[in-house]
Length: 54
Image (cartoon, rainbow, N blue to C red; front, side, top):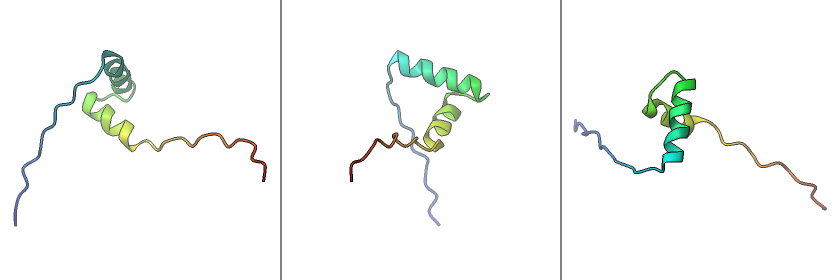
């Protein structure tokens, strides 16, 4: 069986994005990586349905 070596990625982000990650991490009692996993797993909200004229 082949064991895969985990790949590490470095992504540069804006300071504003880092602030959001830091706040999310503190409210979720985790670190930046945990905040990223949380935000990736959160389902996206659907756009409000407008008045369609059928």
